[in-house]
Each structure stands twice: as C-alpha cells, then as structure tokens.
Amino acid sequence: MKRIDWTRLTDDPNNPAAMAAVREYLLSARCVHTNLDLLAFIEARVAGKSVLDIGVAAHSARYIEQSEWRHGRIARRARRCVGVDLLEPLVKELNARGFTVVCADATSEADLGERFELVFIGDVLEHVNDTVRLLRFAVRHLAAGGRVLATTPNPFSRKFYRRFRRDGTAIVNLDHICWITPTQALEIARRAGVELAAYHLVKRYSPATLALKRLAWRFRPLEWSFPDFVYEFR
Image 1 (cartoon, rainbow, N blue to C red):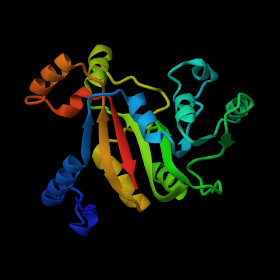
Image 2 (image 1 turned 90 degrees about the vertical axis):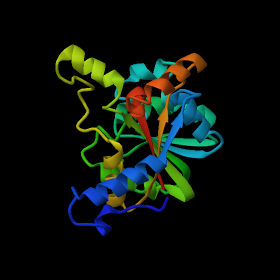
Image 3 (image 1 turned 135 degrees about the horizontal axis):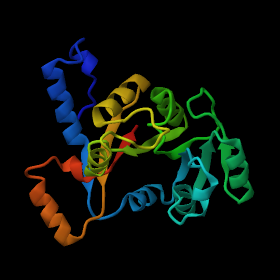
C-alpha cells in the first residue's frame, strides 16, 4: 500500500477520515509470524548481512553472560556486526571480549562512517528522550535498500494487562519514558522523513495453541496475544 502522510489529508489529527486511512494502512502493513520466537525472527533477518546494532549493552554486564543476550546472537549470525552503546565501561568490556562496539550517542548527529544493510534497534525507542533523532541516526547508517528493525513492548498485550491487574497500576521497566504503538511509529517515521514499511507481531505457537488463538482472535484483538512490536522502517 502507498505510504501515508496524514498531514496531507487534514490539519486535524483527530479527523475521522484521516484516522480511517491510517487504520487501513496499518492493517495492510501488519505481518503476523506464529512459527518462530522473537529472537529467531531477528536472527533470520540479520543472517549474512552487515548489521549496526544500537543499544547492545542492555544496561548491565550481567546480561552479557546469558545465552539469550541478543547482541551476541546477532553478532554470530551477521556477516559483519558493529554495536553502538552510550555506556563507556560496558563498551570497553565488550571490545575486550572480542566484539566490535562503538561508544556513541545514537540520538546525536554523529556519523560512524560506515553503511549497513540492516540497523537493529532492540528495545531502545521507549528509553530515549528523542525517538525521531534515534530513527534518523539509524537511517543515516543504512546502505541503499537497507532496513531498520526496531523492537519495542506492546502495552496492549495480555502480558502487560496481567501486570496492571496484579499491581493496580502499570509498573514496568523504570527506565521507560513512553510506549511506541503503531500509530506512534507511523508518526515518528513521518517526522524522521522515512517510511514505516511494515510492523511485525512475532510469537511461536504450537499447532494446537494456534488453533485456539485463531478462534479467540474472532472475539478479541489479535495484538492482545503478542507482547512485542517489531517496526520496519526504510
């Protein structure tokens, strides 16, 4: 479907016709994957490519030792992988361990001097002060035909509803400052001058569970079942 810019339709962000057009675009851009988990999806997308991985340190060195540490898995599957993080002590430790990581602010105007087939932003959008600058940094480092993949939590999922019901208020990662829902991803892309080409819902289901889920999705929004969004920008 053709890229949409709601400001070309109206100057009112609550205009019903513009909202309907955005809804139509987002539903056409939604891709559902039920045969693999999120990390496997990311590994498949980075395999054999040159990759810039933004936000690799995950706040603490303790994550580096875990088998599910994403940067380690990405670095093993990519043809070339360069990491970016703002935490200098962890960047030094990762380089000492044999990874290639640059200490840089990914919301700055910095240019690392290299272009990549894929830029991955793993659960960073919801942490930074300026999501538009982050996306511009990512796109700046794309090779021709490259894509940006950005993962971020889905606040409308069952996972977060259960937590909200249990705690009485939404207590989540204390470093989060926002949620990035599909309409917000579309607006961030517009302000950054790029396109939200697709967004992905990814979770592995067994055949029996999937059959039940498909029945439930007739009565409950499909996105309720997926705890993450994966946005794809170009």
